Length: 370
Ligand code: ZN
Ligand code: ZN
Image 1 (cartoon, rainbow, N blue to C red):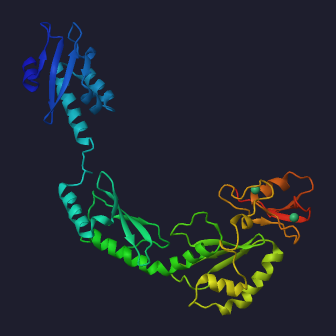
Image 2: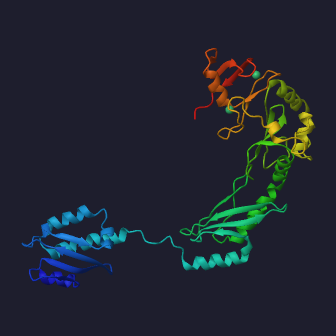
């Protein structure tokens, strides 16, 4: 038994004459692990104490119960160590191997691809060489960025791409597709969207846009101030940007109703050769207030209850319909205000009450449950 122990574990040696202390290394799959074993004076393996190095402890995490069980069942140290090494073999094999590190080959491939594309196009690359941001300028000089997340584990799979555009990013991809080809496809997509951005850039420059606060290149909606606490929501189709967009007028009834009638009556005048903004002006027979003619504070009137304009990213969208009042409110503010008053009635999800400013009847829908 003793000879077997030494033969199997030549580097684990007895430290005293009684042979109750062993110290040294055991070898599993060509790796050495430091181990110290303390046996009780009677040499009973069941009551042995094991002191493992941290690598061994780390490896045996989750297997402690099995090791204890093997210790109980073994008749002598030699057979226990055989069992321990079997357990360790399983541990070593199930340990995650560093497969996710890309092969050196793909680094040099990537470098030569970037060389072809042009280093000036590279805005960012992460330390793993997996996420790249590539710059692309469209023919009108707008700067765009394409984020490419390479699947280094599965190089044959298409990389994940993201960009601030209003349409889904669909690229033609084969494992042979280079970064330069991907970039060229992105440029093509950008060119197909330049008319859409021209339409929106004109609106952003020549009107007061109430929402979104800071439009991104993928935002298709604009809420444009008309004046008199009224505004128009315009949803531009990225694929047909000069067609009549989806429109929704917001504001007091006495302001909005005449505009809505004009929109319906003049719709046939819409000329797809002209810009959306000039068409909207013609159809509604209005001049949009612009940064040249108005201050934004004249148009973005604050809520009559909380005295702020933006509340949880919402802007006042409820208006008193009395022509002499026209006070705007946030939906939530008005709902909370009216709900607290005894004179308020409720029917289904609509609250009927009095305007906090002019005491004329006002209604508000209950805000959707958050
Ligand atoms: Zn408010
Ligand atoms: Zn009022």
